[in-house]
Amino acid sequence: MLGQLGEGAKLLAGGQSLIPLLKLRFANPEHLVDLNFISGTSFIKDAGSALRFGAMTRHAEFENAPLARRIPVLHDCASGIADVQVRNRGTIGGSLAEADPSGDWANALLTLDTTIHCLGPNGTRAIQLKDFITDAYTSALAHDELVSEVEVRIPPAGSGGAYVAFKRSAPVYPSASAAVQLTLVDDVCQQAAIALGCVGLTSIRATEAEAEMRGKRLDDKTIATAAEAARAVADPQSDMRGSVEYKRQLVVALVKRAITIATRRARGEQVEGTHLYA
Amino acid sequence: MPEAATIEKLAVQIKVNGKTYAREVEPRSLLVEFLREACDLTGTHVGCDTSYCGACTVLLNGLAVKSCTILAVQADGVEITTVEGLEKDGQFHPIQKAFGESYGLQCGYCTPGLMLSAHQLLSKNLEPSEDEIRNALAGNTCRCTGYMNVFKAIRIASRNMREG
Image 1: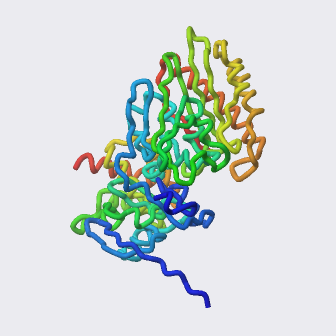
Image 2 (image 1 turned 90 degrees about the vertical axis):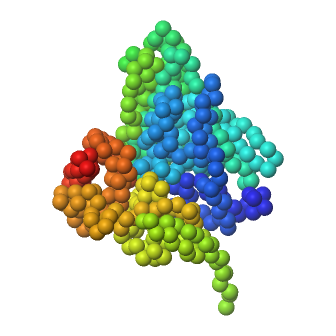
Image 3 (image 1 turned 90 degrees about the horizontal axis):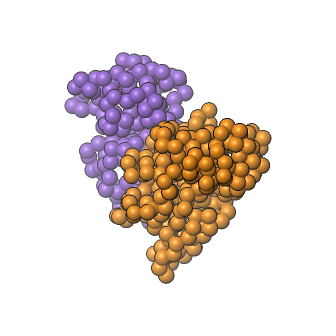
């Protein structure tokens, strides 16, 4: 159908980003193809070494799914997106395809081994998340393709992750966000991934900050050094949510908090609650 | 003079508060417009129209949604509950009674949305914690009350609903 309708067609998933855009006349598609009537597109499956999600799985479904808690950062992310009403409609596939620079899913999933399965008239293809979102509001999807599934590999034993976002109020996008995923062996950090959201055209991996953590015990000093290294990588714009300096400072605080929670979880502790409000 | 484009209308059947409404709507028409204009149920309000305030909140198959952010055609075949659907046999719902008795409203504009969000919360959890109440209402903005009596109303409603 997308092939027949051509470039003037847009896909409608949860509609929580697209419909506001339509109302503001920032988007003017000739046709809308509503994915909500297709059955079997919303699921959370245990695929052994990975979890697989249907693209139309609502944020609220992740929030309430015990299986999603196997990777705690998924629950952190889903339970804090906007508010109850938006979470009841918004979908993971829609969020990733929209590729908003402030989108929660893209940022959280960038710290995990995430594959986006896409479906088009010529069949399926699998794209790693880091290659799927190429620019602000730009994904690798062709106009006649859609996201069908998201696959996330389960991290190894000794891993912990966290997603922390700061919002001025519930219904808005975060002012800044930080996702951390790390693995400890004998309490020494073997692997670390840090992704910063809302402070660039896309989510940014803070690779220098990650390097500061590798091979070290994660005490306060190491965490502070890593968080400072993240400051330099953030590339925010000044806007209603804050000035450049404010957002950089926020990033440092969020990275510190996310590393601390991720470390506690890697040591086996249960830690709840991660979206922060003004 | 240029010809105006004719917009082809689509037929929808939406059950609202137990009654089915079969209407023809423009594809661009929003669910809140359908409820207010086609169903004549004006208890659902348009506040910000930018998907923030939640004054337009209704229940769609039991789940709270912002009706200004859903197209009417997307609601074909679903069950909607609006604030008008809370009362039963001329009796207020415990949530409505509690809001009234606790001064949980002043101008009343946000109130239908708040009560329906509260309904989703209490339909899944009759003993919500303070944090759970706040989280459930985070998508509903009130400019009048400062929220404290709203939370009180929900605590009272939850207790009354528990005791039956």
